Length: 328
Image (cartoon, rainbow, N blue to C red; front, top):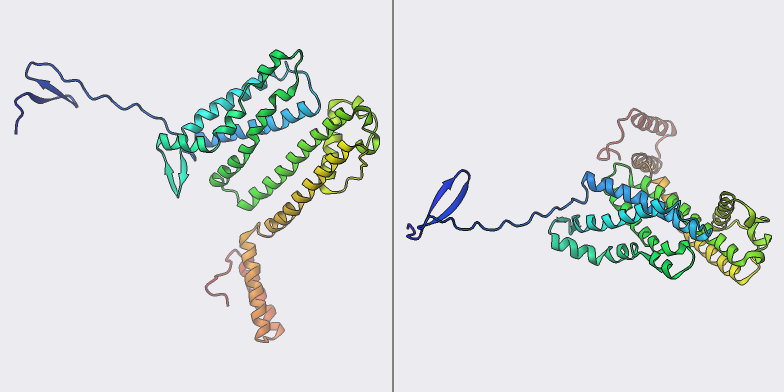
């Protein structure tokens, strides 16, 4: 059936609707393009690496400046501005990054925004609140105004999870790296807290607690090394310092409890990881144990047992391995 009001004609590759008066009907509006970034794309992985390094820098820089009362701010101003800009950009990137739900990649912009708002959004916003505005009402600068940037440290769990998805390294290697990273990070935080206690105590922080004399008169590098050493040995339980005041005692108890909990879990984890570091070697040892038990159960002569073991050791050394369907 042909319409009496209009006719359709071909113009290049587009269709235009013309009414009987020769006027072109308006074209339907195009939907705005939405840029979505895949969570495992190369661009996103490189950005995650940049943000990981940025968060690590903030985790080192901010506690150091707070704990050691570093009042110099002009030197750190370019770094502070750069990290804040990167944090803001990261929020917009996260709003446009896909996520996985029940094994499927979700690309719907509305669903992505809702997922991000329910997840990391609050911590990300808290980490970029310009607390420096409080300096307007103060007569001097203090580095604790940047303490809210430390909320971003929680993001490290996400970066490690993404790294495990895209890297070819064995999960056991990543776990060992994560465990080492956690120990060093805790020692850094506790070391900064240790010197903050000394600054609060001042003259009351005697040698029995600090482990050295005139620590307040030393250079920043010397103070940090001593504080990091105290934190590390206290975490491992080998510290023999004697706290004198209530604050020193409470801080020492807290660090000892953290150390006990940390190493009770990490030592067992690292031991298990080292055992399972080479899965193929573990498989070979398990099968050899089964072969040895089988030969003992059948009372096979010792010489024949040695020949069987030598044969399977040859298969392993030559790279042929063991066929799990033929062993035993």
